[in-house]
Every structure is written in C-alpha cells, then in structure tokens.
Length: 113
Image 1 (cartoon, rainbow, N blue to C red):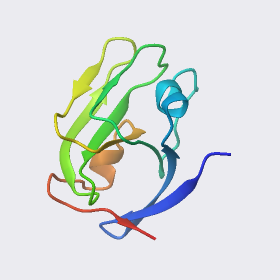
Image 2: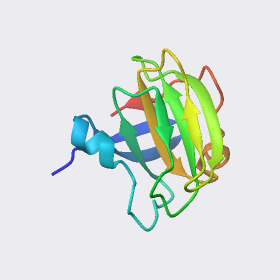
Image 3: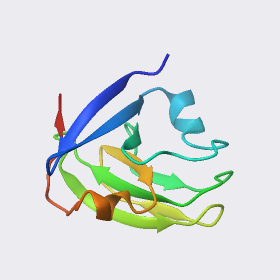
C-alpha cells in the first residue's frame, strides 16, 4: 500500500501518493490511464522525469526538502517529454493543467497536513 498525504497550497488540498522507493519511483505514473484533478504523485528523491510509457500529459512541480517550489514544467507530452531540475529533492507529478488551476508559482511552499 502506498502512503497518501494531503498537501495544502493556496487554500487548496492535493492528495499526494508518495513514491519513496526505487521501484515506486521507477513505475511512477507509467501505464496508468490518468491522474485525477486534486491528486498527485510525489517522487522523492528525484530531480528529473521522463514520459516513456505514459498515456497522458502532466505538469511537474520540482520541490526542495522544505516543499518549496523550485521549478514548474507544464504539459509534458507523453513519450517525448523529459525534464530535469538539478538540485531538486522531489518531483510532484500532477494532471495537465493542475499547476495553473492551483495557481502555483516558483517560491511557494506546500504544507503537509
């Protein structure tokens, strides 16, 4: 069973599945049909993602250890997208468009509840 945590930012909650082992990070969102609005997958530690075997576009939010946003990549394309943020502690994968819906900006900080 994968742990799910609630992260808060800008008055909104995101239910975050935590991928904190090699195998969970390796699988990530590959082979899933979608990720719903209001949900995310935190890959930690992680400073880069690829879109091989993905069926849908995603937004990627790179975080430091304090959950502060270092970089936001919007609309990574299935099969072709690759993204890196050197020095990031983790990568939060969200549905395409979620970064805009949540009004995310570099420097903002998520809170764990």
